[in-house]
Amino acid sequence: MKNQLFWRLCAIIAFGTVLLFWAIDWLTSRTETSMSFIAKEHQQQLLAYGRQAEQIYNQDGTEALAIWLKELQQKEQTWAAVVTSKLSPFADTSLPNDYIERFRLGRDVEWKIHLYFQENPTMEVPFADASTHFLIQLPNRMRPGAFLAYANLLLQIALPLVLLCILSFVLYQHVMAPLRKLEKVTKEFSEGKLDVRINAPLHERNDELTRLALTFDQMADRISKLIHNQRRLLADLSHELRTPLTRIDMAIDFVEQKLSPEQALERLRYEAATMRSLVEDTLTLAWLNTESPRLNSDDFDLVELIQVICEDARFEYPDRILTTELPEHSLITHSSQLALGQAVENVIRNALRYTPSQSEVKVLLTHLESKYELVITDQGPGVPEDMLSDIFKPFFRVDKARASERILTNTNNSSGFGLGLALAHRQIAAIGGSIKALNYRGESGKVLGLQIIINIPS
Ligand SMILES: Nc1ncnc2c1ncn2[C@@H]1O[C@H](COP(=O)(O)OP(=O)(O)OP(=O)(O)O)[C@@H](O)[C@H]1O
Ligand SMILES: [Mg+2]
Image 1 (cartoon, rainbow, N blue to C red):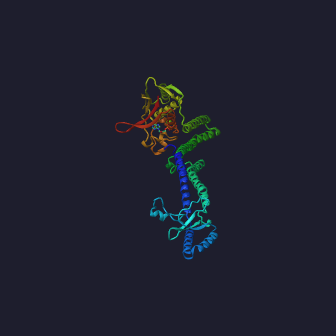
Image 2: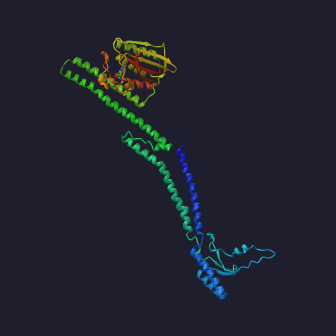
Image 3: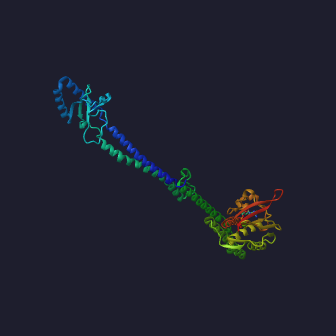
């Protein structure tokens, strides 16, 4: 889902806030209600006063009751009285019995007290006759809700503060936990641990941070692959440079000892040229690997390009038969003549190199819908099936990989550095095409040669 994190935060904040208001309201009203009743021992005290008043009135009469009431008022610092109520309906009306039974002048001691009234309520304890009532204004010391102000402070300020802090912490954790993980992985990656990835469980969140994690992992994959490739390339390059360097050392020794200095100088020139082309090819390959450029600045005729390459190749390999089957013209737009030319040249040279003398190499170009297909078929030994994709890796050579299965080639066969096809692969990718290799087989299934198929966008 798009913007999952936004909706999740929205939901947490919205529901959290509503829930918080509701909880505060509920708790406040619960606390107020529970604080609105006279304490049990005070209820008992008030009832006891009522019973005492009734007893004094019954046994000692009103005078004694008056004295006792005065003492009580002084003792409790309040007002108290004993009154009679006579409900006498008139004008031919009558009162239902239960009304007479429930008729009260004050409040029952068990009733809820309104905490916000200034005046204390009057409490009533009815005598047994139901028409005499002991009334007392609730003494201050018995008034409930003494801690209401503190409770309100706690519920309306402290509790929301704590709950909002918890909510903020949860939100912070929700966002920061993956960011912390990302920071840790980025730090490790920057310190050279190229195989660290964020992976699950961040990927399971399925939100904006997951997208960030996925992008990081993709970036890390690409960068680590690039670095590994570059390291490999550099290691292979330095390994390959060793041979010409040794030969250069030997040639220098020869010059110093004045042993055939001319031959030695020629050797020096040759090795220097070899080293230059090796370094140049490796640098081009590194550039193509790192930048993955799209080469699209040239428009040219592919047939013309192939013909020029074939002419040069025929000159270099006069003992091979190089045949071509090309259309009259084939215009290519938004491509690179240099890159495509080098790639095709490499493939054709390989074909000629691995094809025995007097054997044929065929170059066939066909125009398909929106592309050209260039097929180069030789009559060489082919490539072991499991190495068909390896030959496009830099510095890979079949004879190096399988020294024991050294392929039979002719005199011109001194194999190169194994960079040609790797370069061709990247160069063709840079013009938006593709290249693959397969063994060309006869009816018996026997390998008759190697076939390289290049697709070139027109
Ligand atoms: N036509 C072919 N027939 C048989 N094997 C081939 C053919 N073309 C390429 N190979 C194998 O693939 C390997 C890689 O080829 P690639 O062109 O990359 O390198 P190379 O020709 O050995 O050296 P470079 O092209 O750098 O001079 C070769 O070493 C060879 O073993
Ligand atoms: Mg080659």
